[in-house]
View 1 (cartoon, rainbow, N blue to C red):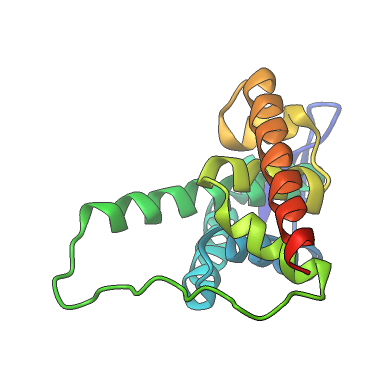
View 2: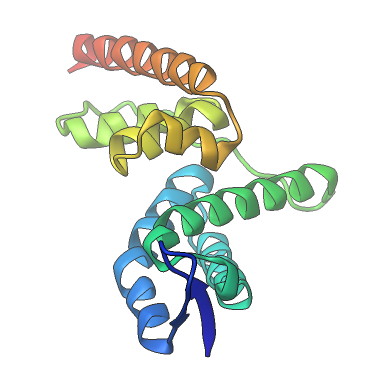
Length: 174
């Protein structure tokens, strides 16, 4: 049984039901957030699993009311660690081929938007997904990504400008 502090400073237990409830409520959102960033389902599942394992190990220090923020923060930092590790490793026989260009006309705005989001730099993609897809405040995004609120706003602004321009260019094609 895990013990968590409540608002009055007293300790309250986090039981298996509350942990399972956090899995039910947030695992899909965390998975989608990570998947949109790294575009690899297996690795996204691994990162979500690692995040829940960290929650389980650290449950005594996590307030159940703030478990969603804890999970997104943990998943984000785990993803960054995985990406950094991948950048350090080089595989001579495993080359990724660039995705082919699409000559077909786009008719679905969601498909165009998803393609545009893929084009964003990692940090811009992360903040825009947290803000526009998950609904986090600037402060919460700053806490998750360890950026200042001002930096978060700048990255979101730049991402939205890019997305607007990208979709505008796609409108000419459609």
